[in-house]
Image (cartoon, rainbow over all chains, first blue to last red; front, top):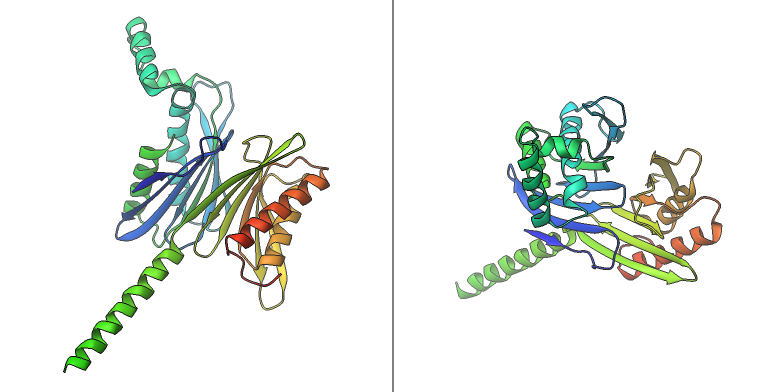
Length: 160
Length: 143
C-alpha cells in the first residue's frame, strides 16, 4: 500500500509504503530533496544502518559511484550493494522524470531515437548532468539476498 | 459454561485491541509543516518510527544539508551526538540534535541545512521543532 503524504506546497515530495518482504512487515519512506533522495526502509522500528551513495564526477564516460556506510553495520557488503543498485537507478531517472511530465518524456525519447537509433534511454540520461545523491537507511531483520532484492524492486518502482 | 465462553470472548477482544494498539504505535507517521516569518521560511519534516525519530529542517530551500545522529546514553543522563554527513566545519544542527535529545529523551536522526553563524535562526527552528514534537506526543520525558 503506497501513499503520497506531502502537501503540494511543501518542497519535499515523499511517498510511504508498507509491504511484506520475505514474511517481514516492511515500511518504506522515500523523500525527494533538492539534492538528495532519502530512502528509509525499516522492519525493526528504527533507521538501522545508514549509507550515503553518490555519483563521482569525472571525465570518464562510464560513471563511478561512491557508497559509504555512515552509521551502523560496516561488515555487510549486501547493504552497500543495495545502495549501489539504487544510486545507479537514480542516475537514469533524475534528468527526465523529475522536471517534466512522463508522457512528454516518452515523446521526446521517441523523437530522439528516430534521429539517433543507436542510442538507448540509459545513454541519453547518463550524459545529462549531475545526479542526486542517496541516503539509504536499512533497519532490517535479515540481510538476505531475497530481502534486499525485494527492497530494491519496491523502491525502484516507487522512486521519483 | 456460558460465563467461561463470555470470559474467553472478552479475553480475545482485549488481545485484539492490544495488538491493534501495538500496530498503531509501530506504524510510521510523517508530519510536514512550514513556518514563515520575516524573510525566512523554515520547513520541517518529522518521520516517527517506533523507536526513533528522523527530522529534517530546511531553511529557504529543500537541500538535505548535514546529517546528525543523537541518542541518550545510559545509565547517566548524557547525550551522545555525532555528525554523519557533512558537519565538519559547520555544526549548526549538532547543537539542535543534542538539545532535542536532552529535552525529549528520544533517539533522533536530524538533517539540517540552516546556514552557519545563524544562532537566532537555529534557536527558532529548534523551538518550533520541539513544540511540534510535544504537540504530537512523541516526547518521552517531562520538560
